[in-house]
Length: 397
Image (tube, rainbow, N blue to C red):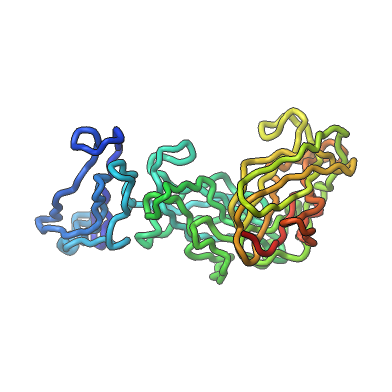
């Protein structure tokens, strides 16, 4: 294993529970004792519910045959006590391995390096791998760079993993967002029952970036970087979500993405999502583009999501009211958002453009007006190219 400290995990892979706690109706694994190179290892990182154990050992033999330091007594580097699972039916234990293999996405001269860690939650859903690793996307000026990425470095063990995002981002200020895409929580707060993502550090073109827009609840981060290499066809940006102030006007967009006219149909049927006493009413219109892709209906309707303080409310929504015909459709977003100021973002999720500006070849979304708890909200954070809007509202239940 070589010199240095090594993270060890024993992980149950076929957990099952009947709903009744007994020695024959609840499948568990226990690590009763450990030795490393002949020395007993004392450790506290054992899942009392039978999910396994995690701990560290020190020293070992190098790959070339040289002998490192002798194995010393291991100890946990995460929490002093293991997370508590559901009674009898434990999830996976906090992983201490985490490959931390560097990942690079995109192409271009500018390099944004994100140091990422995660909290896993192996709940065997369809949005995560067997380990329950957190997945995320990176957006620069509202455009996703690369695909959906997976973190492997464990936050509670102070591990980190470097993700390099490349591009020709151009001059000016750029909005960056790291967004968790498979959030899940068991209802019990622990490092293995609440899937989260953390941005532990950022460099841009070799310089460390200081920022405050990190979701302390593990939803990701949002911040700005400045400058970069110019390239033709840079895309317009939407404001990133969360606790930073939005720019007063959106950055300039792609010259081809003009917000074109569309067809005359569109029911404008009101839609409501979420639950709670606060009501955010968004009056939405769209430009359609029926290109028969896999991300839109046969009409080519624009789809979008609504985020309040970085958290999506409801699912992916479809607009039907045509912007070119001055139609509008009311979407009511309900919640108990609490006091203080809240960041709201309406984000187009199926942007497309044929390359030709016309009435039916550019898919866009527009926020025509907003009310919050019955009062009109004045804002300037709308993308003139049809990517959506970002603004703040104050107060709530």
